[in-house]
Length: 176
Image (cartoon, rainbow, N blue to C red):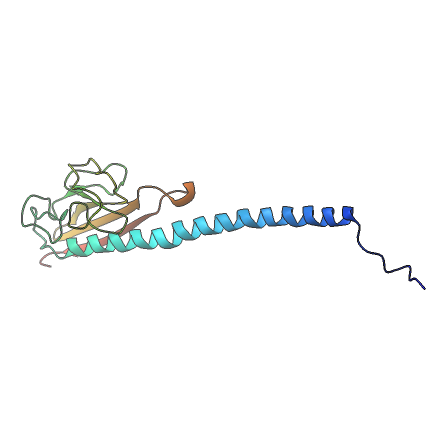
């Protein structure tokens, strides 16, 4: 006795099902690529730029209100050779101002410091192998009140995306 309803699948049915599965997987894989790129850029790199901007802000806030000569492009800050908290600079990472910019390698080491994978920069010329750039601007807002803005950005975004950039702004008062 044979049963009429127990036939196997044909080769054409298997090929159609395989083509459908491959098409669906290709769509899912492209979504996975976008997810990985977004996570790297907006998660990891954005968090690092914010951390490095905060480090620079803490270094600047440690200076006295009237300091106009400390060099914060090195760590710890040198007593002379820099701009201190003198009015000037820029928070545009694409237009750095001399004495108001520093660079970090991919591990967050200040370029020129021991262990850094990049050398000291010359003015606003970026050194080789830098990965993070920090720029800052100091403005006198009112008598005894300065506004300090720090921007930190990566050299490029992961996977061709827009690079991660973070901005921090604080007010500093005299005599602090």
